[in-house]
Length: 70
Image (cartoon, rainbow, N blue to C red; front, side, top):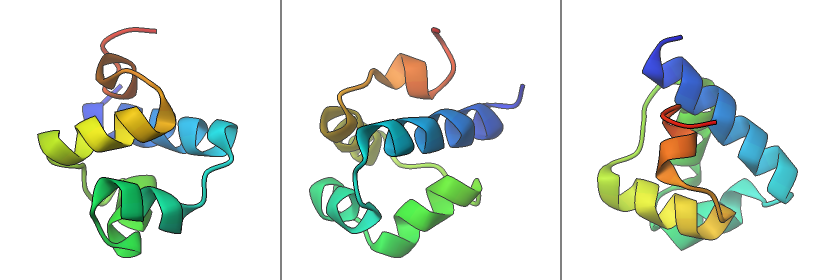
């Protein structure tokens, strides 16, 4: 599976599981709500700094989000 697709799949899964609102995640990750929407749709992927903040907020590893571990 392509990395962007795997990230998109797992990002959406973690977002649903956590019950987090996109606007709250955007605020915590210092990005716009549109960026979060683009990540959900697979239109873009976060920078390493943003990925770190997303992982902290969602309490998940970057390896999991990127499809490097299950």
